[in-house]
Image (cartoon, rainbow, N blue to C red; front, side, top):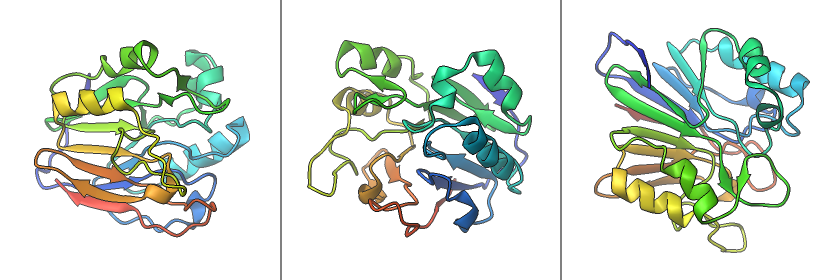
Length: 218
């Protein structure tokens, strides 16, 4: 993991996900760290991505971290060099990678179980498990685009679509926070003895801006 230093010990972290080009309409609370868990675009075009990155980079938070989601095709189709050039220097992009900010070990991954013909699809089982095995055991804050199985993962029809292998890895690691999105209608917070799970989807299942960013004091 790369390392950054934050001088504060009491930090406010702001979470959001699934804004789908509606980021300009979102009320972003103040904080020290701003995290977006993917699907900031609709079709993943360079124009959509550039608009989001410019907006995200102008937010006042000390650290701004994001991952891609299944709509953000640009980040799967383009070469790493091209991606690196388009990202403003004050943003942190994670793709099966991590960063440590004042002893908070953060890891991010855009993959989710295969769903139609979207970006970062992986077959359930061994293929997707390879990505979850990359998550370090000492991770404190985990960012994935998709949810773990059975936790804030039910569609409007009541079907649980999260990833069992991700759930198993999270249960093994027990990060303090696991944030994701993807399933808009499952927005909310769920706490266990060891982990706070956050579905931070801003848009609802009808792609309307109805939900607030989630704020956590670390």
